[in-house]
Length: 271
Image 1 (cartoon, rainbow, N blue to C red):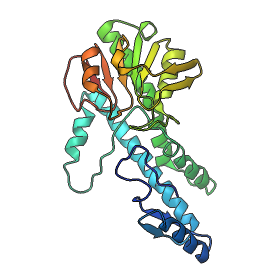
Image 2 (image 1 turned 90 degrees about the vertical axis):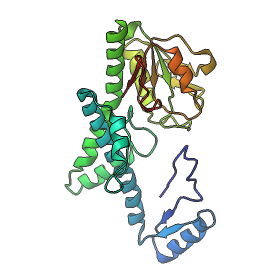
Image 3 (image 1 turned 135 degrees about the vertical axis):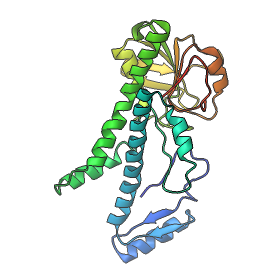
Image 4 (image 1 turned 180 degrees about the vertical axis):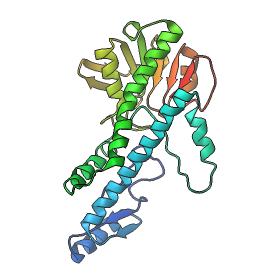
């Protein structure tokens, strides 16, 4: 199965262990010979079914754990607790905890889709994939939560409705340092802001110079000429962006990726 992490500078194809299964012993041997030319570590398994289920477990594990931490983020929002600080504190435990991080939703061509393949299959055996369904429900809720939080911040701080507001979106790729917008929560959020809430939206993304929406095409604005906006909504935490400049130029900022690492300013709000 495929193991690719776009934007990951440490793990590329050659140094990510490759799980290999074969229909027969001869197929398995040939697959190992092929991948052994380009991948440092090969991990053979007994069948293609085991190899396929490995991929589904990996991506379902990620989707479910992101769902858990997204639900924790929703709880912390209501309780007035910084979820990012909670995660940093929990990370100090040297055993029994692995950090996952909340966000505006999940995206890409694997995590939002692969668990549903597994769920579809096991339903044919009269099994209910409850964790998968719950995680999907929570993760799918996050874009709407972000939109509602933007509307709330504009109303409380500026006495403005979304329909009368200008929103600057920072990042539309589904994850940091990649140009992949497939299933990106940012594209869904922009669609909703423009089409349903009648907001005026601009975006900047160093990896995605233009993007198509149902209402037309948008082009990335230059960060050097920041657009005048009522709120800056950070949806993708690209490492090449100068966030200090953003912090100085906007009266309201909603940071859904913790790019400001707990910085406390009157105009700065976190997921």
